[in-house]
Each structure stands twice: as C-alpha cells, then as structure tokens.
Amino acid sequence: MSKLLLYLKTNEFRKNLIYALIAIFGLFLIIYFGLKTYTKHGDSQEVPVLKGLHIREAIKILDEAGLAYQIDSVYQLDAQPGLVIEQDPEASSLVKSGRTVYLTIITQVAPEVDFPNIIEKNLIEATAIIKNLSLKVGDTIYINDIAKDVVLDAKFAGQSIKTGRKISKGSSITLVLGNGKGADDVEVPVLINLTLSEAKFALQGLGLTIGSISGNITDTLTARIIAQHPDSTARIIPIGTPINLTFSND
Image (cartoon, rainbow, N blue to C red):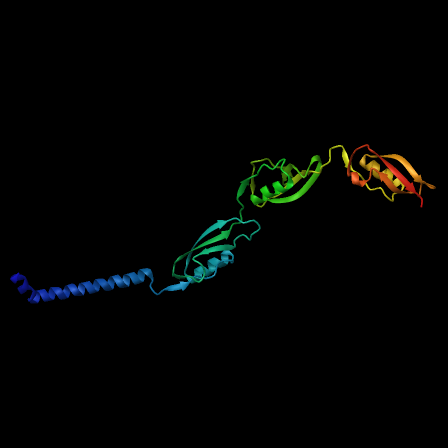
C-alpha cells in the first residue's frame, strides 16, 4: 500500500494521468463529431407535399430537395395513372437530407381478375358481382326469353366471355338479358286512332291478325279505331293472336 501511495506522488503518474485524460477527451471529440456527421445533426428539412402530384413532378421535387424515393403502385378504376396517392413520411415531417420517401402511385396497367359466373343471375345481383371485381357494366341487350332481367350471356369486345377467363379490371361487360317474353310472344300494340289499313300494316309486322270488326262505320277508308281487344293492358300475347277492332267515323 505504501508503494502505491508513493507511486501516486511521482511525476510519472502525473504524466500518465494527463495523457489518459487527453486521450479520453480526444476520443470523446471524435465520437461526438463522428456521430454528428453520421446522423447529420442539425441538417433537417420538411418533407414536401407530394400527394396529388404526378410522379414526374414529385420526383423532380425530391431530387431538388436531396431526398431519395421508393415507388410502389396500385390500380384504381377511373383514376389518373401516375398520380401520387400516398406518401411516407407525411408532408411537413422533419427528416434528414437523403432520407427515403416512400410513394404510392396509380399504375397504368390494370391487373387481371377471373371473370365470375353470372349466368342465370338477375341483373341487380350480376351488376353487384361485376362491380365488386372492378369491372364495368356496359350495354344491356334484351332478347326474347321468359326469364325477365336474368343474365343469359355476357360479352366482352363483342364475344361471349366464359367463367374463369382472365380479364383486366375496368373492362366493360355487355349483358344479354331476358325480356320476359317467350320466343313466340309479342307485345300488344296500341291501335287506337288508326285506320283499318294502318292497323293491318302494324299487326302484320308483329305477326298478329285482325279479328272481328265492329262499330259505327260509314266509310271504311276514313273510319278510325276507338277500341281494341285485347288492349295494351294484356301486354304480352302469342304470335298469331287476332285483335278485335271497333271503328267509328264520328
């Protein structure tokens, strides 16, 4: 113990202590300034507003600000391709120079989906299924079929499309639907106020015939129909059905 105390009083100990303190202080300065440089302490800036801009404009702003970027993309129906819809960090956040800003943009290439089975679905149900897959209902074509407003066929680009076929989101689908009529049924025409020749022409075009003729007729050329049976309230009748007509010259 006495030797240790004597050593602590020597000049050699004092020199070694001073050297050690200098070394510790120097190491502290190196670490302090090194961390400051590495973390760019005091070199912060606000993230610019990029959401809502086109990606080309957003990249130009980031390059001028000295910020890096990484781009991801999603597809949205009827949205402008190349539009920035999300950014991270948010605008006005403080970041260091060179920080990476993550951008999400609208892609121009639509992803594909499997076309669903909508045959024999009603129009409302089929429309909901199509829209849930980000597809569009285009034209609706009605043909004679007793299944009213039921999907009989689906077409894309003029061709029937089968269930399971790959199709791009946003594509327009034409639906072929039944009109509630049988193949041999027609709608009852309105013949009121027509002459006999006009009525014959209208009925022949629909495959119907003239039944009995009655009424107060003094001139068959000018007499006009004042009643018919069946009338338009019957809506649908078979082809070949006779229509009974009542005329008047009054």
